[in-house]
Length: 309
Image 1 (spheres, one colour):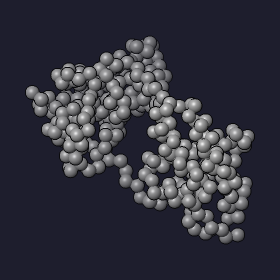
Image 2 (tube, helix red, strand yellow; image 1 turned 135 degrees about the vertical axis):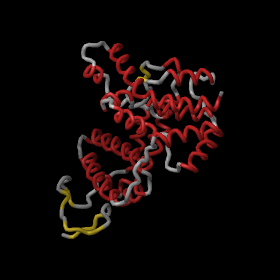
Image 3 (cartoon, helix red, strand yellow; image 1 turned 30 degrees about the vertical axis):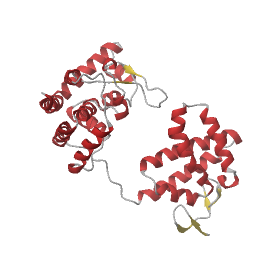
């Protein structure tokens, strides 16, 4: 039997979706009143997360759940979104299908979603993706220099991202008194992390009278505009990738880098520092970090301090 599959956008000879155990094109969402189900799902989620997280994430992306009634339409909608937005939407859809499975005591919704997701990935993989560009050391030095000329606080922000490997959102909320102590991320799926910074950063922050990096929207706009003129591909998040690549090339074990960046649990410390307690192991890791980051740290420090003397 030759059937038309709206996900693939072409006809092909396949009578059944073997994994689903149902005729091709069968969609369990089509038999639901999705408006009602989505509202019930949102009410359920609202009791589990904070109001700000609900408004910022769940409520926004849940509007796409109503397109599940048509797999082809759902694919068309997602194809217009950026990879990051698609990922967020699919996470909400995954939770929605689990909610339906629990409500109706079945697995058909999450099973169908997994099949749908695989097809969507096949469709999207046809389009060439632009790989994330990581700045070289020389490019990073120039980027810090450009931002130092326009808005020194933004240069300090880039500097801290480069030597800590943290996410931009984590650095924005980082206060000096928190440094090298666990910082729990409230209402987040991210792990607790340890922030490693250098004496040079603390000197700069002290000289500028900052307990944490403070940014004005106007200053950030002007600095980013100047950077984009020379490095249009540059993003703050690329500095997280830069840090990981830099430290691994310098000889740090990948698992240790993962721990510093909040991707690995504290068991990493026990693996590498088996005879030390957690505090001593943390000090050993920090000493290794400080030695490996020293050259880059001194270079970026000198660029910034030269602009504010």
